[in-house]
Each structure stands twice: as C-alpha cells, then as structure tokens.
Length: 78
Image (cartoon, one colour):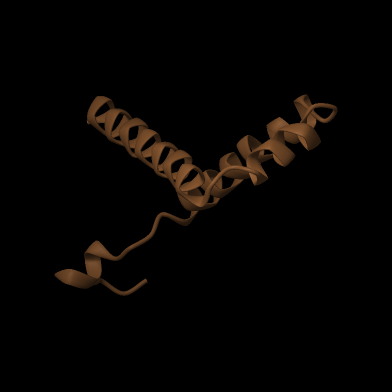
C-alpha cells in the first residue's frame, strides 16, 4: 500500500471495524422481529397510525442515543 499524507490519510477506512459495525447493526435490527414476532404486527400497525412528526422524533431520538453511545465509547477507549 502506498503512503498517503494530509487529508487523504484522514480518509483511510478500517474495513474490519466497518464490517463489524454493519454486522452488529443487522443483529440489532433483527432482534425485535425474532423476539417479538407475535406482537410485532400490532406494534407496526400502531406505529403506522402515528403522525410523521412523531416518527421523525423517534428516529432523531435513536440517532442521538447512538451518537452519545459512540462518543462515550470513544472517550473511554482513548
């Protein structure tokens, strides 16, 4: 691999870590379907009846929680 300097060095990707993160995301996404298969259709129906603003609020809350977890792990790891 050729040496890279400056801005391009910042763009290097740890592919192992990236693929592990994708795998973990898939595991976490699949858990509710596996654990709550009987109740999930009712929950999805209820969610589909909610206004878009509420669903966006839930999504933003999940994003913010994820960012907090990432920040905490990075702070602890360094």
